[in-house]
Length: 464
Image 1: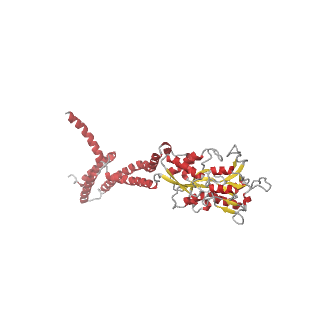
Image 2 (image 1 turned 90 degrees about the vertical axis):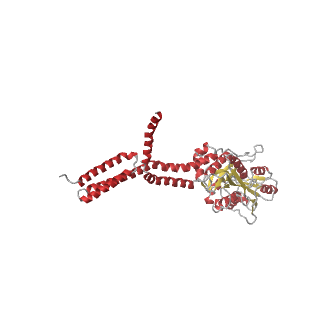
Image 3 (image 1 turned 45 degrees about the vertical axis):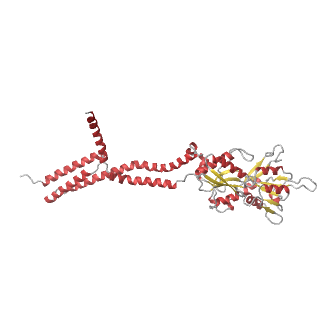
């Protein structure tokens, strides 16, 4: 008996559950939900197709000569990126100009590189590149030999680049930015190859040795082709002086990518007071230039590394001055602009890099689907209800047509009408009607009975 009671208590519940599923019109449900499901699938596919792939585990940077300041900076970047599992491959190049050429050449396997200002017009295709920001000043340092006068007194210091006319001048290696910028500055001062003026493509330690040994008269040295240690040795070398750019402000007005800097007296060596006086310099900025398809996550990591490497105060810059989104010859990339404005995204701030990358890509797929689900949750039930009601209204239309024909139909036609009513009733009884529309369903059946009563009275012979 207890089992019978348990079964009797269970059976009605099971019947109700079964009734709910039997009453569902699966065809209407498929027609209503089908387009929406298809739209969601298409939206998810588009999101997957448009989404950037996972960030690569390695990238390549054009760093410059192996003994240059740029190369040492690239080595520090490599150490920082390795913390997040990203391998930074360093490619030795001739300098900024060579870096820019490799970036602009789609056949070169280079993703990012250090490029000093003033070179964009020299390389075709560089307008398609983007900047991740300026990372430092690259001072234009011009060292020259100071030959004593015949009476033994020191010769007066040079004040202008035009005074280098007729001399042998090292302007930097063939692939360096120094060579391009030096040639431009000399040309603006009327100093060009020819007559007694020689412009030599020498760079690095070779230039320092040639200058101290007297093989050349002057040398342009910049960070993309020489180390700071070499510059320091030249400051201490007897008979070698550093040119004071007395026209620094004029250079800044003429060349929009240059900045005027002041090197304070004694900043390199306080004991020896090197330099011996305040010295004015001009300097372009070095930019971290990349191809426009660089993954956003890697863009963030590179800028973050730049903050760590270049953010502190140094001889030529203030703390926090670099990196900076200074737009000169290359537009700041959208990802870099977003980073400078708001920093790393919440996901990358709070999760490990590999996990953040996975979540970030998943969100790109999930968000469009959610945006489609929100209106779909409201529209699909309305469409489903409209289809059910339209079927009920169709049978009401049939009933009205039958009822209006009662007065004018003959006896034989009324019999056919009654047969048609039987067919309508059978069709209505076969309808799958959701429970939410049960009241309308039973009202329809009552109205079928009402029309049947009128038809039967019309067909029945009158009483004697």
